[in-house]
Length: 270
Image (cartoon, rainbow, N blue to C red; front, side, top):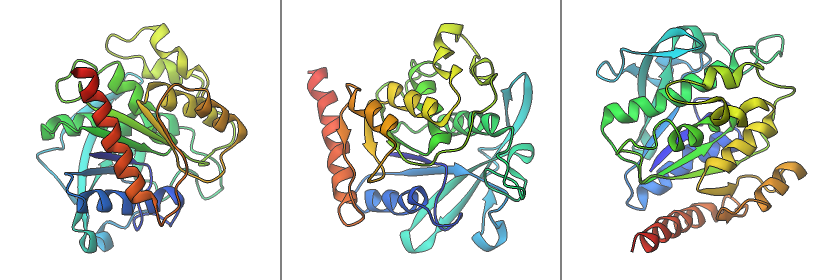
């Protein structure tokens, strides 16, 4: 089980995504599944207090975003009560500023689109370096919405991901306006065509939600009430859907959902 979250408590202030990012991997691990958890190493995360340290054997790669090389640094920390490690995707240009998604002035960072690209690609390339094939990849937060697309296009023939099932959770983690209008151009690398990246012409939060749903194998409703647009998009999809589950029941419900998703793939293979 690969968990990719834009927020994990206690590294960022508590939120719906952060709480799930903290407790869901632990619950899954306690149910006997092998897990890995990834999040961005935002500059507001205190490295000394949280005992982050660089993993030299995984670092050192460069990722190209918008024709510029950006060094990929991998750090790791442990949540001791959970006996769980968290991997952090880091880069000095994208993640050193001492804020999350907006600056002191409250303005959304203009390069959040590139930060999302770097984060998602960094996760995939790090998992490749680990040589680990996740059976399920669960994405949480709009910054992870690009990941289902990448797995289903750029990395579709990679042996590590060929059999992975992707789950995308939808939340009300909206931002105002749009990301850089050149986002689809920045995403178009390797053998991708204009048609492949056309989905990302809409860089609003809803546009990212649609992309996450489109390329995922299954969808989870992460909050009790979503926007009407997001709810309609989920309802209109042909994917397996898990409705909202409260904090008392979601661990068991998610575990069963994963099992059913994997079982359905085995049935199709037979």
